[in-house]
Length: 157
Image (cartoon, one colour):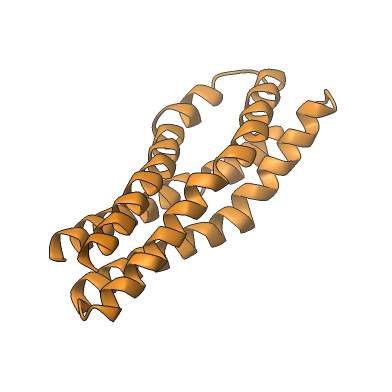
């Protein structure tokens, strides 16, 4: 049972780290870089990034959450309450992250993708980007908490 738990938690750590790293890069680099380009370039760049990312990033995100849920279940079934609780904390923080993404980030992504496909620059493109930027640090923190919880769960098993 421990090997299954560690396998599931390892998969969750690796795939959650992909999302964490992407969000961290956006908070650390992209946010500042995008503030320095004109509206057409902002629309083209972010629209194309979201066009690709919104197709590909759900895979590591979903795998990370599912693997964490499996790991939590395995830990509790095996009587490893600390590992199960830490993994459940990771699942909860990832759920909050998903809620923020779905409610705030995804609608902006969809609008920017539609704009770039239509070769138009929305009049409110800067406001859309500010909305997206307003939650990126919170998203990084949530992903970071999830990763720490997953690592601690693996160590406690």
